[in-house]
Image: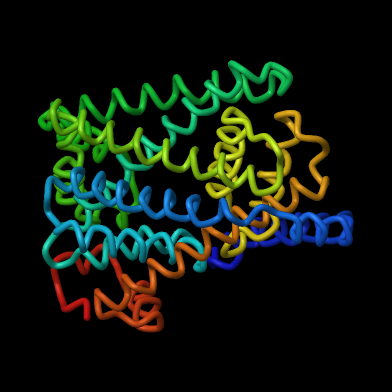
Length: 340
């Protein structure tokens, strides 16, 4: 199946969300809300988000056990965020795998990204649980989703922890799996090498001190995001609410995980608007809710653009060169060639 067909449902969803937003909002009320906003909160919110980017770079460097200098960790991470924001198919993760070469294994880097995603998803669920504990009017749907996802993620975390500590068991599981009647194309893949590199990437799970440091960075990063969201609320409301700010972060994080057009146009705004309404801030299409959804999306895209562009300069990569290299990048190229 061609990649454009894979992205077609997301494109339709984004177009539908954008059409619903444009046709139903009150443009005059929106302009009035934007003109009367307290933009003095914008700079501190931006600085909090920028600090959060540095904290996430510290976490990623820890997951790589110091395999990259902090500056390169920061720049490569920002490039990946910018690529995810403006390119389809999560090209940002592929960008990280390509940019760390040849110094680091792509599969080890993939293991660090997998741990990142697991930690961030757990953090999102913690934020959701905390928000729901003080926002009972949001209903049972959110609670049911959290009850279903949290045990699954804990089981996944336990499985990864077990594999990281029991490499011999992981190898036996792979050998057993390969006894199944797989097609020849699967059997020709270097699965053994991939497994070893992936297990290397999971090693932070076996180091209590390192794992604690990673958890602290995760907590710090999401706390900064929560505070930035709270300050952004003060731009359009006389009073902000930490629980509602947390709920909006959860909604945005969930919608980003869905396939959509680059930038999540339409779907991102609706996620914020629905979260605000669920938290007791009027109706989704109320002008302040629409304004906040647009503002949060805009400030994040601005930050990704600025920091990602700086990263491209520091890594001596052009946007066109990056896209072409990602299109050509394959697992079988591990350890070969020059990335410039």
